Length: 185
Image (cartoon, rainbow, N blue to C red; front, side):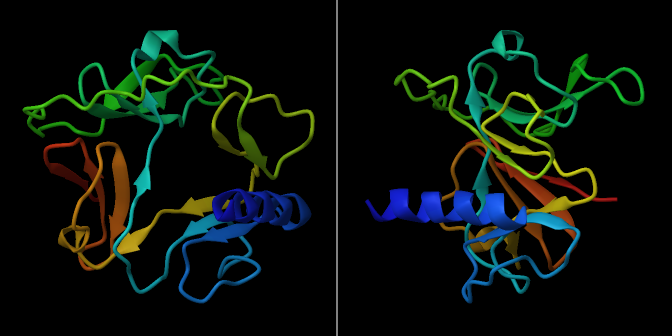
């Protein structure tokens, strides 16, 4: 019941201000910066990450758009959807964010419960926006701040599909259920 109330309050806050924070030690009405749509965790680092949606087949996704992030349980990879041209409205390919990571010895299996395809939340944008997704950040002038950790090792039991920003070395870290992969500039 507490989770339902928290989720309802977060959605209501998003509808009112278009900005929310999740998992901060000292909750605030809005993120630290007006150009942030959603902010996870504390700026100084934490011990939790964000789990990307699990899919069993990228081809079965209903109209994914460029910028879509998923965990593909068929090959145990975190993937990023790309378009072929500027302002593309459809995914033309997927970039493997788990590149170089070994495949888990025991495959991570998606939840067998059926998905409610109409479930989802849109933050910002216009009511006419029909982009499909679990969480759609529709603002055109705001960003999402990933959960921040001092070290990926601070996460005691990471889950497949987890994404965090490592503040100690300014890297994006993704976990495929076996090992972490890192991205930096």
